[in-house]
Amino acid sequence: MKTRQTLVLLVAIVFTGLGVLGCAQDVVETTTAAADAIDTAVARTDGPTGTGGMVASAHRRATEAGVEILELGGNAFDAAVAVAATLTVVEPMNSNIFGGYGTVILYDAERGEIRYLDNNGRFPKATNSDVFREAERLQDMMRTAKAVSTPGNLHGFEALWEEHGSLPWADLWEAAIFHADEGVGVTAPLGRAIAGTWEHFSDRAKEIYGAGGEPLGEGDWLGQHELAASMRTVAAEGAASLYGGSLGEAIIAEIERRDGFLAMEDLVEHEAEWFEPISIDYRGYEVVTAGAPSNSFAALVAAGIMTRYDTPALGSNTTAYLHRFAEATKHAFWARLQYAGGPEVNPPPFDMLLSEAHWQEQADALDAARAGRFEPPGPTSTEGADTTHFVIADRWGNVVSATVTLGHGFGSAVFVEDAGIWLNNSMAYSTYEPKGNPMDATPGNRKHSSKSPTIIMKDGRPWAAIGSPGGHTIPQTVAQLAINLIDFQMDVQTAVDAGRVAFAEPDVLLVEERVPESVRAELEALGHNVRSTRRIGLAHALRIEYNADGHPTRFIGAADRRAVGTAVGLDTTP
Image 1 (tube, rainbow, N blue to C red):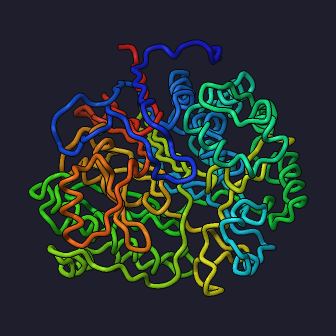
Image 2: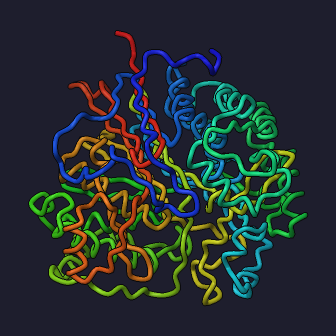
Image 3: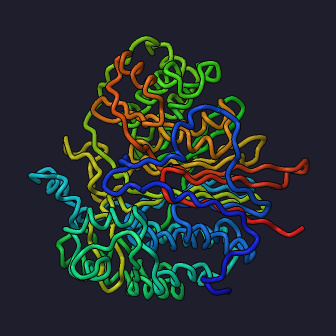
């Protein structure tokens, strides 16, 4: 394979490094002139294109790693492993193929089917959730080994490759290993995350992510040699090296030293899990996302309610549209809290939630002249916003939409020094009162999540792939993306760039500053508790065009201009 320093040939590249990626919160205070006031379906130049595939991710190096795999003849599933591994190196605060978890939606062109891969793992069998209820400050528990759940990403991406990949497993790790060993420049997002979490770092972590006793900042060089060694081990031995092998032993030794719950038994018994996706018909398009045990259904509930309105007539990001969307997504948020469950225990009532009758009932109850008050159905919890999303499509029409995370930035801040691995803090996002509620950290149970990777189908083929980080704002961002693409017929870059709103507890409407000030004022006049913010989510998306025979002919990508992501299209020779 060519050296990682060789520029990828035959690609169309767009760099959108004009903002700052979220560190401690998904909604961060940064903006750029290039991202201002893109709020209508005004025609404009689309994102990068390609004839042989598309990759869009939160970092240029990760996107290039995926395109290199496509260029070598690999498919979207091969490229997904390379992208996920490289993101572990270049944005270690947000994603980790070893210590993290996530949700993947994929389309297999040969089988003609969409599949849902759940990488979220389970709570350790030794979990004692009473320690969270008894904690004086729950947020302090988020940065301890007790918050670490069974990591699922590595098993998941190996299962993805085993069932759908084509290139040798070891080849998929070369870019990540190269960048971990040779080093990468620290981006503004990474620098902010290091500084924001510095007090929780171990001495060894401070040596790697700092210099002279100070945290690395934007433009500094970061080498991660222990991480590179771990990746070489996985490239040679597969996921077994973590789920029972030497990497697993290193992880458990660190957990035991810090008095956490995770045990080798949890790692050995873990396996990748495939579940059924769910979908709705949205004005002739099929919008598909993850079913139970994910809470992704909230995105479909919000979008479904909006089908009860003539959304195009309301207009993109007008007061009338945003008021109705805010009320629809408020109900979807309520439904997520009320009906979160797994396929075996407390399964969500999809027949009701995804029905036109339910959507109409909610639309009829909506006051077009006044914001309703949010009354949660029970206990609530926050969810980490430090996450990443990427999308990939290949020349055969295979598609991957994946959202992965560590929870908070750098997860639990537990660093496995011998392995260079950060571990998640997914248990910190459970609901601990009352004890035994469906969102409690129950030993051995699955973790529910709002991650909503989505594929939109048209005429039986993938038409678009979308997704975003953002904790509980994820389903709301995904619903807005789908509406932008379908109702307002935006090109994919404009759909990603358009201003967003999101409901947030206890009863706040977050509204991006790119939404006109007059509209924000009118929303306040309707009774919304408006809080202006610079950014909601960090979406990446793509669209696919086909010829008369149903073969993909053109791919269009979009990286969110709110941050430093990159979309790259691969061109094939005639």
